[in-house]
Amino acid sequence: ADLGSFITALPKAELHLHIEGSLEPELMFALAERNGITIPYRSVEEVRAAYAFSNLQDFLDIYYAGAAVLQTRADFHDLATAYFDRAAADGVIHAEIMFDPQTHTERGVAFAIVIEGLLSAMAQAEARHGMTTRLILCFLRHLSEEAAFATLAEAEPWLEHITAVGLDSSELGHPPAKFARVFAAARAKGLKITAHAGEEGPPAYVWEVLDIIGTDRIDHGNRALEDAALVERLRTADMTLTVCPLSNLKLCVVDDLANHPIDRMLAAGLKATLNSDDPAYFGGTIADNYRAVAQARGLDRAALATLARNSFTGSFLPHETIASHL
Ligand code: ADE
Ligand code: ZN
Image 1 (cartoon, rainbow, N blue to C red):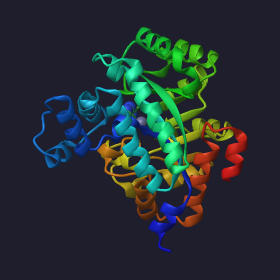
Image 2: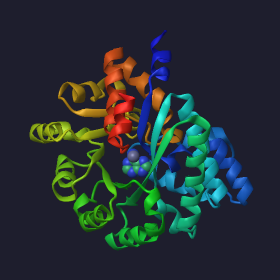
Image 3: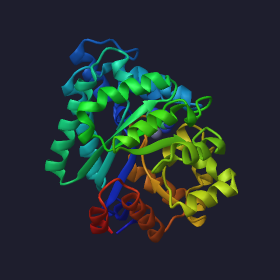
């Protein structure tokens, strides 16, 4: 079989996927029409043309604006179902999806609407595709600690359906330590922890995530490579990094995929995984990410299999289930 088919057939877990970032322009138009909402684009082509970003904030402005079409339980259900159907076709057998409740509660859509729509799609995907799913609630780091605490309080009735909390949005100027107390409170409730760090932010932010927050995973982590002591710390901690190559390219974290550090991470003994981040905005699914780095960095099948294996050992599944996937 060719490498593309090998990649699709390889059982994979996706660990870094923002469900709001899986909103394809076609569904954006359909939901805008269904909800009587005006969006600032005339066509799907015009939307795709607007997806040219020079940094993370450029993208976030457009991503938060796009989320305005999401209004009802059915909208969140349809959004997540479209993602799970594509992921299953891509060979994803386990998906841990992130959502940003504050993006929705801030514009008057209730937390219950959002999570009930996502949970029904998760149950349906498990039944239809035989996959497993988990939900990660992310706090927006450009908002306050107080707002994050309020969000954690809103999540209280659904804690048995939430596996972890995460930290996303604008990284520069928003060091992780601002949320240390919220993450400690989440940990006390039995939740796992992950945080975006070292995407645009400096190695110091990755150190903070390790030393002050105490995470189970790090999302991205690219800039950790600038600090040899940090690389050593991540390696000895066996810390999983959820790396997103097409995202890195579109947000100018790397200038060219030919310079992507994924194989340097593996060579340094880091537990890297491959993920799609916001596939509708960055031009590719998880399998597209595997194919893109395989081509750009010349990864062989053994390296791709290692990355897929890391996605299970780095997942929040129970140990017995992880063992059954290895
Ligand atoms: N929200 C959605 N995608 C993100 C990313 N790549 N970095 C930070 N926040 C995000
Ligand atoms: Zn992300």
